[in-house]
Length: 249
Ligand code: 13P
Image (cartoon, rainbow, N blue to C red; front, side, top):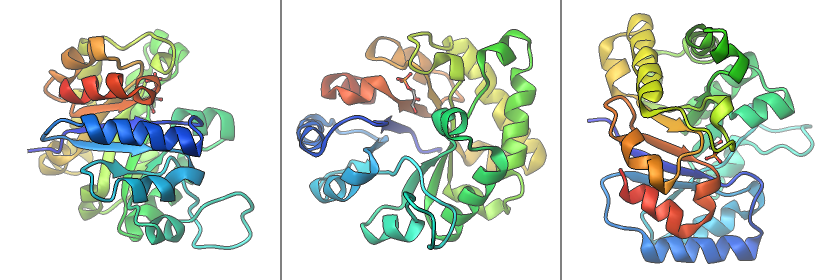
């Protein structure tokens, strides 16, 4: 059985005091669930979040990290810094990191290597842009992203990977991939991994969908056989919405 996951990517939102309020609400309202629930506050609030959630079942992830061990990388955060405050999960390759901060799959391959080497779990994001879908290239775009960032990994590293398919045209736009579009792509991703590795690797990796998941559409998206949960942006910033999405899995 693959792990079902609902993860909230808070992006550049919530001050420390707002973080504490949201975490208190989430801790109070979190239902009993078979799913792993993750929140990813901004860097500066990670230690406080980790502290706050010590006795909670909610896990904390970072939204990014650098690939280097340490050194002259002004403004960056290392894997050891995350591990030292008790975090072992990191989101890598989010489309905003790719489009706004110039991250490409070659760089992301290095970040993934560091995360895996440090014993962390990488939540690896990828997905096509609108023009790529319109021109019918979405499958080859996704296949290339996986190949370039992940397919150099040894089979055993896949136990430390979670995939998050986030079509860029559905992020923050209110436009969601239909449940059938999500299922079609997730099945394609699994087939691509099975061809590069084997069916056991493909069947064991959790593949999350991200892009305008809301309380009203989560259950139908999550009901698809190859969708193992969601990476939630906007709706993870409101306790009631995020909890409703957790309940939908
Ligand atoms: P929205 O849920 O706001 O569309 O964001 C999705 C996302 O980017 C999660 O990482």
